[in-house]
Length: 466
Image (cartoon, rainbow, N blue to C red; front, side, top):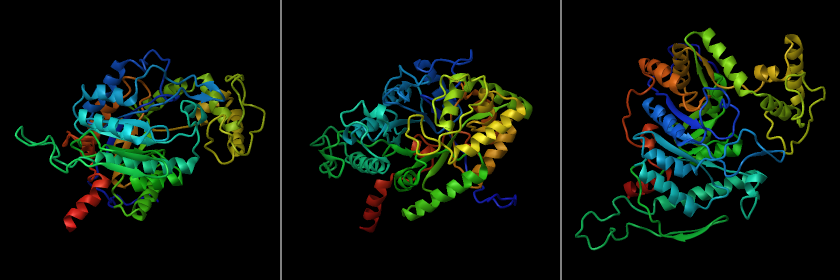
């Protein structure tokens, strides 16, 4: 699928979009180095958001957990306690930023649409049209234990609930027509007659009967983000989302194949194939030279993969609990457990772990690596490493050949992990004409170059036909 003709550029004027993902539990953020700052101090959130806005990013994206994560019944040692609710945090950031979008991860499995839609609408109004919603679903037992129903939905049912949730939310966001509020003190009522409608919905998951209490923001609806990579997740995004996150942003051919699949699903859903922005999550490591960038990557990986993290990652591959082993010792002698994973150690990323374990053993023996050194070298890899100029050329190729629309960047340091990107990479991208030199709109929808909300298009089409 690789294009080799330098003149064969299908999207010569395409622009790269950037978001920043302030994560929760993860091992990619460097936690213990002297350069690392607080994960819960409001100043850290303000610093990241303002730096991203200085770099003309589209959005600040906030991950959220409803409960501390557990692994095999134990609290994950890299989870974060002490953060406010995501929408509350983003509302505070709306007051100290002017243009950058503010995206909340909010669960559709354990929330209710009448409440969450109103809270998202409130964020959208307070930020003057900069809100987004990352629609996530959950089936894990430790989150379900927070709620009376528990973790009761299987994979397919979670998406069916999420789709009905979105249907209700959009109806609530459309409950007020444009210009619903009376325009003068002499008007006979506070609203134009008939401009505020009642929402009645009866479905498999929800039974709603109410009148929405908030008007629309300047962008109409919060922008809908979605991150599912399964077939159901991709179809859900093709029917419903404005932006899809992915794990397909490092290898060009892999990213292009993912983009082609999404565009095929968009056409099948009756949408234009450019109707959905594709923003893979990525890490960006920058050095003045290629050698410096590689050395920086090695330091970052050594900080990211602690002894406990190395044992956790290896445990996922072997399918057994390795937490009491010596991470600086040899690889486990046991063969990996093959079969259905019960979820105790998380989701496996490989089809046959025996093949990967054999490769790890061969290379560890050849190089004299310990278990931790093997995980650093051969374990989960991500992101892009290089000089500002080299990365700008690479990203321009990705976006102009339709493999991506941009990246959702996960900084390896908080709160200063965006500085190199904003100060060094962004100017190189601007020089190539592949990145904005200023915000041209005021809403998140306008930053992303999106059409009007999906639910509004049917109304507009009916009005045009009538």
